[in-house]
Image 1 (cartoon, rainbow, N blue to C red):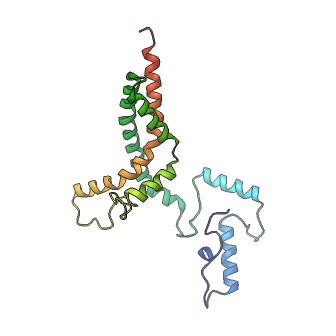
Image 2 (cartoon, rainbow, N blue to C red):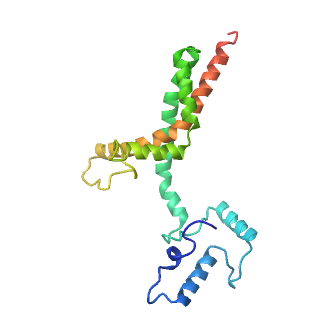
Length: 207
């Protein structure tokens, strides 16, 4: 209910000669009916009932229409599923390829400098909020005023018409390095601790 865009100019227009008060009122009522805040008689729907309607629609994968774009929200979600799956698969590969060897080595070298340093690093990574590390990574690694190594948004360059298949794939991977790295921090830290503890338990068993 408090999301931006549900009221004001973004939803009902910014004004103008043809944007009369009556037109704006009619547009506002039409939008509120679409959002299940008013019934067909323009009466206010109680807030608990609004929530039940929203929950019922969400369970049926019906999320309504975007106020800003005028397109069904489900179409936005569907179009972004492939990139989301790709990022999560890459995240799992990165996490397991680093966490398992690191946890095994920390357990074998228990109490030594590697174990202590590895534990300190993983605890620090696990404690950092992802939204903060993501913003910091963009500011440092994607900012041309700093390092500017990676792009700050998107999954491809703006113009890819001149690229070969290999260049297109490399550009795709290059755009994913920074977000996948940030996504991997929390899972990597948790899994390496779990792997270390599991191996230490097994090393103390009779077999």
